[in-house]
Length: 172
Image 1 (cartoon, rainbow, N blue to C red):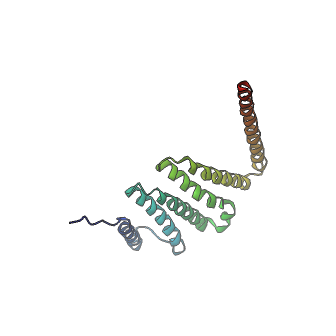
Image 2 (cartoon, rainbow, N blue to C red):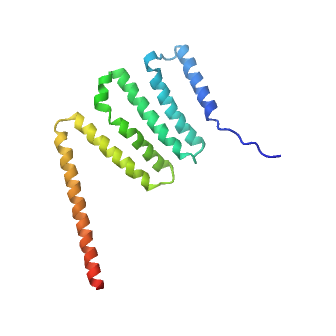
Image 3 (cartoon, helix red, strand yellow):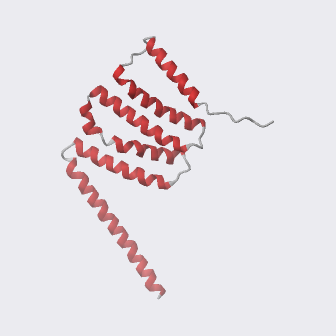
C-alpha cells in the first residue's frame, strides 16, 4: 500500500479562524464596523500566509504575500479609521510592504543576501518619501546625507583603486 499524501491544514485553519472571528463578532464580544471588514480580511490573510509558512518552513515564498497583505491591511485599517487623507503621508508604506517581505524571506529563509538589495532600495526610497512629508527641515537634511554617502563611496572606491594600482605596478 502506498502512503496517501495529506493536504495542507491551512485552508481548514483559515475557515475555522474566520468562523470563530465572525461568531465572536455576532456574540458582541467585539464589534465589526462594516466598512472595515475588508481591512480585517487583508490582515487575516497576511497572518494566514505567515501561519502557512510556520507549518511548512520550506515555503519561504509565503512570507512575501504575508508581509504585503499584513502591512497593507494595517495601513488601510489605519487610514479608514483616521481619515483617508492620511494616505497622502503614509503612501510610502506601499513601498515598505514588499521590503518587509524581502527582509522576512532573508531572516527566515536560507539567508540569500540578494534579497537585501531590493529590500534596502525600497526601504531607503520609503524613508526618503516619509521624511519628505513630515518635517520641512528634513527636506534639506536627507539630500545632504545622500550627497555625503555618495562622496564617501567615491572616496572609498578611489582609495581601493589606488592600492590596486600600487599592487599592479609592483608586479611589473
